[in-house]
Amino acid sequence: MNELETRWHDLGEFIREQRRVGHLSLRKLSEMAGISNPYLSQIERGLRKPSAEILQQIARALEISSETLYIRAGILEAREGDTDLVTEIRRDPWIEEEQKKTLIQIYESFRSEHRVPRGPASSNGSEPASTVERASSVAAGDVGAA
Image 1 (tube, rainbow, N blue to C red):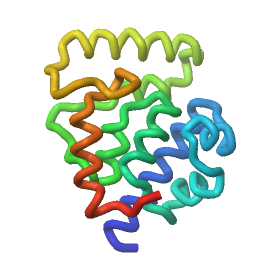
Image 2: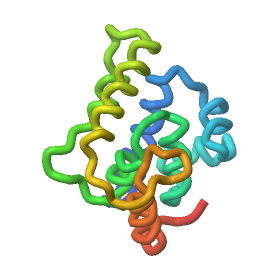
Image 3: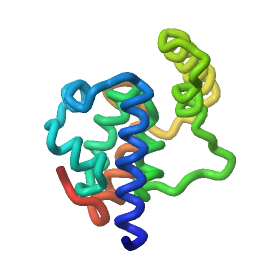
Image 4: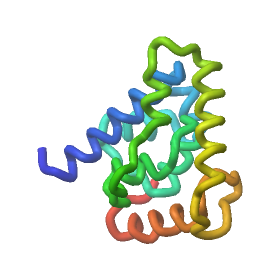
């Protein structure tokens, strides 16, 4: 397996893990993300290369940062010092699901108070448009469309 194939396989594994942590079936996540069940299955198995837009839909459904998936897909570079606290909260076996959601909401509200504006918010208000636009423009050349 070459480096690119390994990256897509690892991305698929990460999405599957996040789906399981969130107690979502493949069918439920595909419904929530607005993509087909077979397509999501192929992404999870590393057989398909989703576009930045598809990754954003999956991230929104999983209630994680789109940037997390963009970085794992190689669309964006990780910034120094960034940790994925949301993923770590979701993995914690000692906290109930409702507590996890509440903790993530509080954490994200604190972060948004100190976030440097990078452009107008997207339609859901959680991702700066520039992040999605930057990922989409990079992905146009590197990532296959849905």
